[in-house]
Amino acid sequence: MIDLTYSLKHMAWANQKLFTELAALPAECINATYGPVDWTVAHIAAHIISGNEWYQHLLTGAEEKNCQPPQNTDELLALREYLKTFDEMYLEEAKKPDALITFDGYAKNEQTTREMVLHQAVYHATEHRAHIATAIEVQGIAKIDLDSYDFWSYYHSQK
Image (cartoon, rainbow, N blue to C red; front, side, top):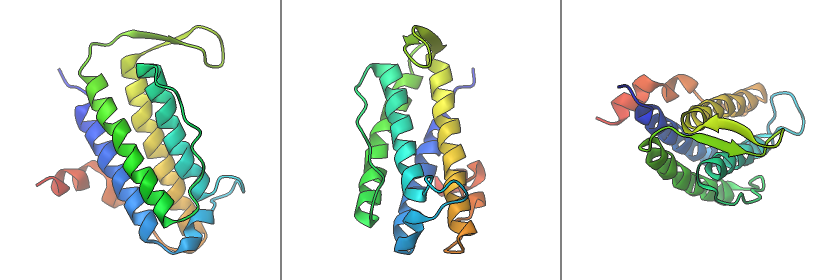
């Protein structure tokens, strides 16, 4: 049976690559936006983290923290390190059999499956890496080459 492990490992690699690249860019990239004024790179970075906290809560019951948008390189790098805890958790959760998860979301007693939460985690990270790359490029600050984040690039980076 094909499983989600490779996608989860790719997500971990791509998130680490993104936060490393962001920390190396000019300081003004943190305030770049692709359209919505309140969705700066800093806000999107914090949103990636808060999404992971929500998925962890669904999967393990862990309490969510209130992640604040990073203000500088050191805070970006701290978030990069924090992301590793989720990556490890996802790989452990992927080893378990699928199960029904009940949670309070938009409505009381919503249900989903462990598999669906893991798929959503991968999708969510991918979506927001694209938003960050777009914001930085639209503002003319730099370019993050999303083609270098694909599965082929991940595969070759593991050799």
